[in-house]
Amino acid sequence: MPKNQSTAAQSARRASRSGAKYTEALRRAATGDAPHALHVLRFLAERSGNLYYLVGGIAAAWAYSGQRVLLLEEAEDYWRLSMSGARRSRGRRKKEIEPATPPEPTTSTLWASPNGPGLLTRHTCMWEVRHPSQESDRGLPRTDRSPLTAAVADALDAYDVIVLVPKYWSYPDREIATAHVVLGEIDIFPDTDCRTALPGPGGEEKGVPLSPEQSAAVLRERCLDFLFGSPHLPIVLDRVIWQSNGELPVDADYLAGVDRDMNRAGLRPLGWSLAGRRPLPHKQLPEPGQLQDPNFVLRYQSIAGRLRMALDARPVGRN
Image 1 (cartoon, rainbow, N blue to C red):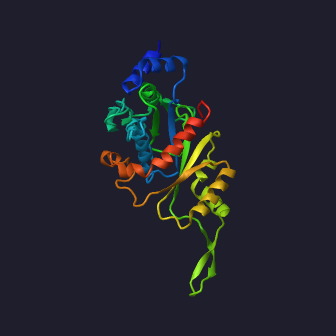
Image 2: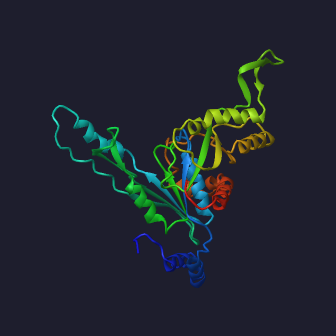
Image 3: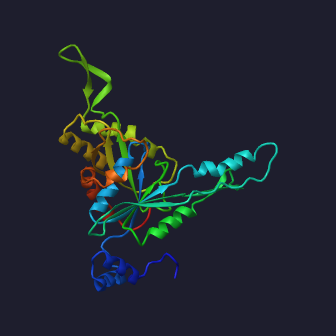
């Protein structure tokens, strides 16, 4: 049997350690009647710097609800280190260059339930190896993604959800991810047309108000253009979550109209999140102290719950 393949007994033991009866868990595992399938989730976004807190908050909310969640993060700068030897070897005097030493994986527990199965773990490792000595047809180093494949395989039996946290978020992952969710980041909400203006009562000029349908069209063009302009093959987008970096200037009825038009266009929205103050440091997951703060996690529980329901309702299979 392959090393990473789970058996019914192993699954039952894990369930019994979480408080379930061993015999009942063994029956469910043997018959395939498990409560939920494992999800390997990839968030997609054109810009990711202000979205780490949203992803960390969703993962923490899942852990607080009793799920075992792994944040699988790509290690920093391994590609640059791997390529440095190749760049140096292109000089006039070529000599053998030792390959860059890959960083050691690190694992830390961000939050664990004191009396239940809820768990949030962060594992940082390299995702790929690029071989300068093995060039592709275009003269670029061949890429080997076996480190990421192995990391996911090792985690399959231990977690309910694996959230992939890459360095670059705009590319889908059809090989590893079982679901893709888009994160749309809004700096200025388009409720008025900035190109035309109407005179106000005090002499000031105000932009022409946009309908919810017009606003939705602007959001798709402004925030999701990276999806439509991609030359890659189509993927199944499971849902869309919007994050506004400022207060929304419209009411709930207006947002409902935007959501209806998004649904019409095939982009099924899950909700709206307010970022408030931009996180510091930039492009980093929340600190463990924040993830352990119930008030912080509470902000993301609603969206996390709707997202989990959407993932569980999707057909089994990978994009």
